Length: 246
Image 1 (tube, rainbow, N blue to C red):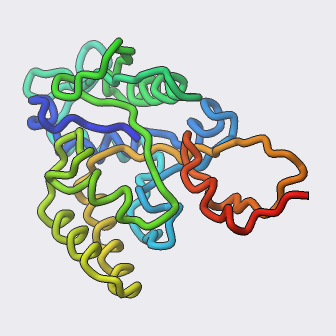
Image 2: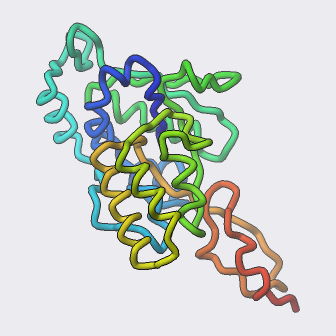
């Protein structure tokens, strides 16, 4: 996903334009071209989890809608082929560490797609991540296990890995309530509301779920492939007690 640094003055001025950015990204093309088909388009953080809410805005690729939202927000096309608002060109620097399969290819594709709709996006590979100074960063995480593992710490205002400084009072409320109850139906309701709120106030552009590709001896049986998620294949050993070896 593309993480925004909400501490940066640019997003404090232009946070309302984030939905337009989401509509400008062709996730299917990213999976096809950058990942060679080894993944699926993403629309939220719980998409591979049993508490997923599929009935939310997916921000499917719609460049015409992206342009319409920009223009409705007071943006106008400038002489250089990029939108401007208040005398400022719309655009940002997208940082990436080329330490995982496909990451540089993903950001390159995203930048090209955003440029095509009039948002000037450039890519940089910093030697060290500047969490406070950067504008946006390609980040990856995820878990097919309990949703609290990668929601509360990432999305709450004071979450320990909320490095984008995202803050939404309703998100805080829903995630705190969800971790305080063990009732599955109530958790489903709360995580559903959490996901709805993320689409109204997006903290990221969700891009794709990357397949974890492993080579395993033919002697090993019983590995639950649905448990594999992310570049570290979190969940790989989730059912190791059920494995058998010939």
